[in-house]
Length: 238
Ligand code: ADP
Ligand code: MG
Image 1 (tube, protein in one colour):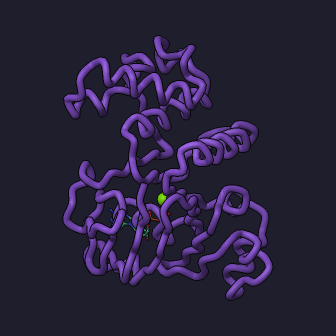
Image 2 (cartoon, rainbow, N blue to C red; image 1 turned 135 degrees about the horizontal axis):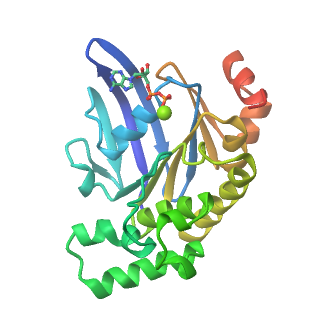
């Protein structure tokens, strides 16, 4: 497990700066939801933590280690996206074990890790199936399984539920929280959905135009919004 510490972080695409000096401290084991309107920089911030985007200033530390110059594979993080492409011609077990196979982990250990993750996610009966034989929710669980098998110190989620229908979305919110209860892995969860933020977060980070508008527990933001933007954003229905 690990804390994530972000200090004075900046990002520009060419001449356009999109992250303007962001500071966030995420204690070990916390479930933080990063919320804000489309285009405010949520994905960019997450991708910088993952090491998928370079940074133009500031520092990111994971577990006390500055990771600015570490490649993604050495950051002990696992990311779950909205468009989690599963390999259609691989079974659930092979999909979940693929990253470990690439790391040259031996077969029995891969099987052990895949079984452990399948157990956590209720996927044991589906390990031999193919993605096309699964429901949307089951596919989402396989995508999470691919992250869990790697035993990351930090989970990063980027709008993982936005392709699911409303009912399944509510169910998966609860499942992701249960997963966190069980593993206590530090989590940064990105969404533009304020209901998702209010119901899932230990603390919410509200972003606007590449800045942080406010950080606080859901009720704190609801009761004492720091400005009109937070009040409008948190208070309005999705
Ligand atoms: P969010 O995830 O909150 O919707 P993003 O992090 O995707 O926002 O984008 C933040 C800003 O950066 C937007 O203005 C977007 O157009 C811009 N941006 C994102 N990726 C790139 C890129 N690869 N090249 C240029 N601009 C980008
Ligand atoms: Mg995004």
